[in-house]
Length: 264
Image (cartoon, rainbow, N blue to C red):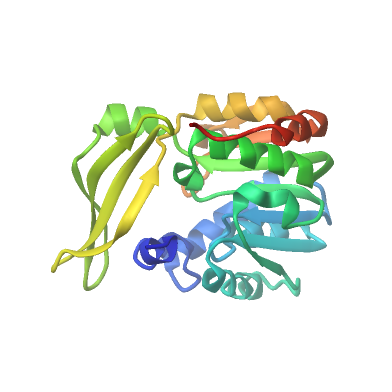
């Protein structure tokens, strides 16, 4: 089962007609306004979903161009709803594709965002490809921002890893996940998702529980500047921890991607 199956049920945070998502959109726009982002630049929204973060960044910066990239083509069509609600006439470029292959999918941009705590879908080898690919796609003084949470502390320590866990509840269903195994070479946990009642299987997915420090370290290899902006610093309850990278090191990114492979 592809990610479409999973995100058919776990998606309220990015639905344009969801009040919580609309509040998040407003806070995202205000957050981007507080940063010194290029005005009138080119915004690239990665793992965009419905494009909530990219549209918010476009609104905050008066972007001249917005590109949204995701593996799920159906969700990308919803970006028009966010742009319309923001009063923007921007015509987005929609790209269905694999974020691990960015350089071959999009042209140069000034700001790239990867929001929505989606790094959990990528193992460390994926992360190297993503960060290097973004570095090659950005302009010389470009900025890359990743919104995520420290799952090593929050899930593996504070909450504790659960064999069975209720992920979300809808009007007529509950989505639960069950531990199915661990891949030591990739550092990923396999979980199977089921709909209740009825225990209908949605699919199996591999997750890597990232800490923020490791992402900062990987990002610093490919960017000249790396810092962490915590919720207590930016002040928005619907925006998580944000990793901020600037000045891509294209020479290093090209060198790494030229001879890089996954685990054997």
